[in-house]
Image 1 (cartoon, each protein chain N blue to C red):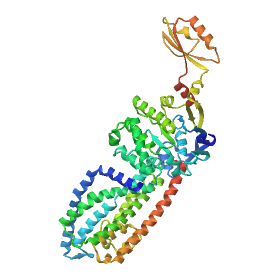
Image 2 (image 1 turned 90 degrees about the horizontal axis):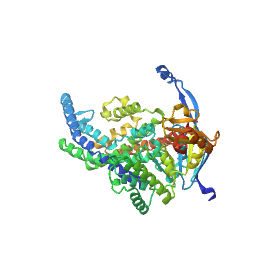
Image 3 (image 1 turned 90 degrees about the vertical axis):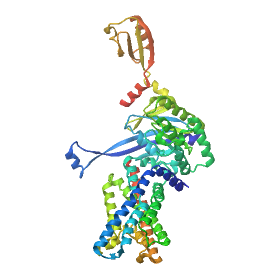
Length: 266
Length: 328
């Protein structure tokens, strides 16, 4: 099947760059150590058991969760698509009997499979040795992995949409930056959303970003608010709804963009 | 043969582009933020093209003549404004996905191979992409390896290949799904003479063995002379020549070039009645327009008047003919 073959070929390609993956294995523990020191002193200063419902262990592992989610989702579809449009290489791809969406998805899947293999697996072992995750169970880890796969899809669609803006904008790095920062701030990619005032949390409810970071990490931390099957199920369904909407939008916009591209020439 | 005789049948093709005009200077750059002047230009302005199955057709023209636009329309990635296009029974831009399955493309300036992987990995991916049966795929790989002598090359990462080796591999990539029609866009650009010859031999052989039709755009006239029987010249969005290459030679056959070598140095004014293209004391190249004078008589007089040691009469070289056509 073409999709699987493309994933395999992409993985071969990315494994050529295994050094950059190995570098992140070396760096990630230092980020964890940094966060351990940071949150220890914050908790000691406040003399509190919990801050906004997070214990010290949970807070430290929240930051680890951010790293893990990134390992599951990161891809650069937006740059690849912008490059195709700006350099005119899109024409070459249009000369192949492939659907570019699935072709790009195969590259992103391969990139993440390589990342999970070379980063996530060693990271979670090393992290657990440094600061044992007392809260973690096999079930919560499995639930986390599943929602992370959906986070990946969601993030891929966002990237794909940003990439497509190159048809109209040519240079979309500013927009890209804006979306990334919003995603981090409003999705829980820097701090838990519980730290925000109510009105800001309300805004986050209307955005897909917290289904990329915040909820997956809540599941990872095995927080009480999400550990029933009902809660988990509703998070998964909401993710699927956002994915369906995003896919539809990508599909329609792509058709329009290609029609215009073929009308005026690259 | 009837209907099917032509693999490409294009009539009255037109494609307009909007070109934005902007004055020089920073002020104009600011002004262009809210107001732009557009001008409509016909990049392709009524092109007709018919190509027979199994032909190797040269498609040439100066830069900006409308060649690439024509190729883009014929490969389905650009819609024309007007005109009829029938290629292998398809209207390319209407059924692009189906159409491109039967199409192969080689770009001299762009690679289709995966840069970090050996070519064989790209081939394997293309096998899936085009649903080539395993057995046929193996046969073709063996055939191409033998023909191009790339046994070891296909297992080395592309970034380590020389340009000549890489181009051979690019060709295999474009041919694995046995397309009926292949567009070659400057396939020999940057190659040394031997590599060029190898690529040409390959094109000829595949053309014979698989009956593949090739459309070749190039700026290298020796490509045309070696490969193409027929050539189409496009200039300013129109077809300005569409016939055999040998006929192109006769395009200016009313003009002859006569190279003369003299026994002894001549005074310059002894040659002043002739149209000289080049001359020094001992040699001269004279252009003769047959409309103005008879060749036999001209040479007879020349031999009588001047101390001629050697004489050579030739046609205007094809480069000059094409230069003439481009600049007209």
